[in-house]
Image 1: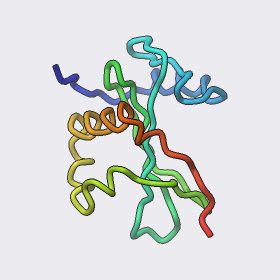
Image 2 (image 1 turned 90 degrees about the horizontal axis):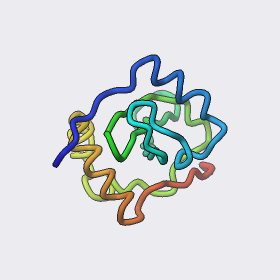
Image 3 (image 1 turned 180 degrees about the vertical axis):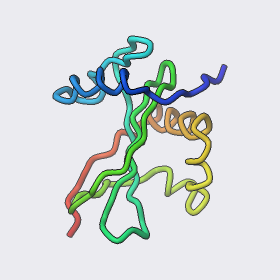
Image 4 (image 1 turned 90 degrees about the vertical axis):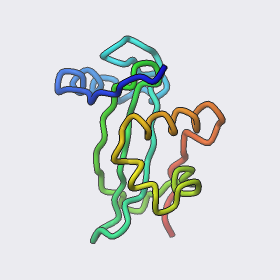
Length: 120
C-alpha cells in the first residue's frame, strides 16, 4: 500500500538538526521513530551557480524534506533518476508520492545512496 508523503514541519526539522552529526542511515524519523533515513541529491542545472536539490525522507512513513543548497565544487557520482527518466525527471519530482516510491526502489536495489565527488 502506498504511503501518503508529508513534509517535515518545523518541529520535525528541529529534531533532525540535532542529528546532523550522524550518517543519514543512523538518523531517526521524528514522525514515526523509524531508524534509518534516506537521501537523494540532484544537481540543479540552469542556475547561475552550481546547486543541489536535496531530498531527505523516511522509507517507513514517507515524511520528507527538500531543499536547495550551494553545491560549490561538489556533485554526485551518479544520478539514477536522471539516468532512468532524463528530462521527465522534473515532472516526477512534482509528485512526492511517485518520486519517493521510485527513490525507495533505488535504495532497495542499491543504486542509492549516492557519493559526493569534487567537480573538476
